[in-house]
Amino acid sequence: MLDWLLLIYPYVKAFHVMAVISWMAGLFYLPRLFVYHSERPAVSDEPAGSFVIMEEKLLRLIMNPAMIATWISGLTLVLTPGIVDWSLAWPWVKAGAVIAMTWFHMWCARERRQLSGGQAQSGRRYRMMNEVPTLLMIAVVSAVIVKF
Image (cartoon, rainbow, N blue to C red):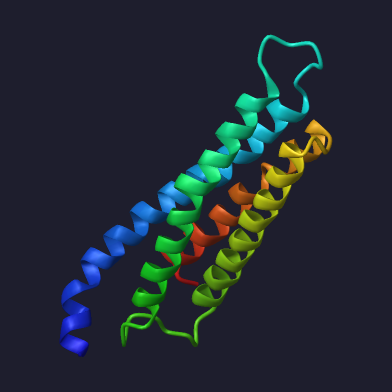
C-alpha cells in the first residue's frame, strides 16, 4: 500500500493546494459580503435578497465542497508514511490553524443564517473578523514552507 500512496502523493498534493485556494478565497470573500450586507442602507436600489443569495451560494457551492476536499486530501497526505515528522512543531501549528479555519468557516455559516434572518452585526465586527483567515493563512504557509 505504501508504494501506491507514494505514487499518487504528488497528485493528491496538487489537488490539496487547489482545494485550499478555493476554500481560502471563500473565507476571504464571505466576511466582506457580510460587511456590505450589514452596512447596506435601508433605502437602497440593491435588495438585501441579492446578498443573501450570494452568501448562501458562496458557502454552499464553493466553500463547503472546498473545505471537505481540503480535509480529505490533507488527511490523505498526513497518512502517507514518512511524509510528516510529528516531532517538529510545524505540523502541529498547521493542524491547529486548519482547525481554527474550520471553526471560522462554521462561524461564517452561522453569521450567514443570522444575516439572512435580518439579524446583522456591525460592519466593524465583520471587518475585524475578515482578518482572521489572513492570520491563519500566514501561520499555515509559514509552518509548511519553513518547517520549524
